[in-house]
Length: 305
Image (spheres, rainbow, N blue to C red):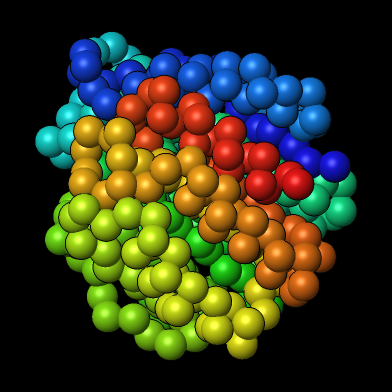
């Protein structure tokens, strides 16, 4: 079976009015999954809060302390021009990271085969010592570190198809060759930090503005698939951002739902070959709500097929 993890706290984190990273992202996805009949096929879990022991492998003590101490009792605390905390943000961020710990345990223990975490705030921009780009803790990195250090896996892959480069995930695992980070993104575009690819470790696919599904599929097939076959990951994580969709207002790629289904199905085949089918996916970007819901449905359908 497969699972779905979320928590009501993820709806309570809000930034300035009109901010694209809004609570409606969670409810839109859940509504679309329900209408598609997918929630009936998923075991539902409440996301626990990540503990300091889960955050410490990927974030410095200074960063954890700063995020904890910055949480306001009222109003907003601005972290950067795009990123702010309200009184519920810290709880939401801990739930978002904790969802990845739970999801990792569920698939490694064999209780579930694949898990989708419908949580926010997102995480892949959060670096070891810095919150940025709507992100406070790096959720997927927390899950990866838990798989490696607590659950003793040896090789883990992260597949990040968000339109923005997952600079935080790259920063955290830059020197850890147990982790393969496969990232596709529009370039140049925020956060303008992408390093050159490192075979067998960091696989960055830069796509120009205007690129669509044909270019995306050809580029990732060439750059990722032979490397995945050589690396043979024991667990796959998705940083599932849907803001490369052609309807999304924050970027300029032209993917559609079928492209998300395609990449998910391709990784699912590798997961069955090398990882016993084990996959964990967590929400990153995606800001055109109707397209976000449809894209998440396509992704989850392929994930649990």
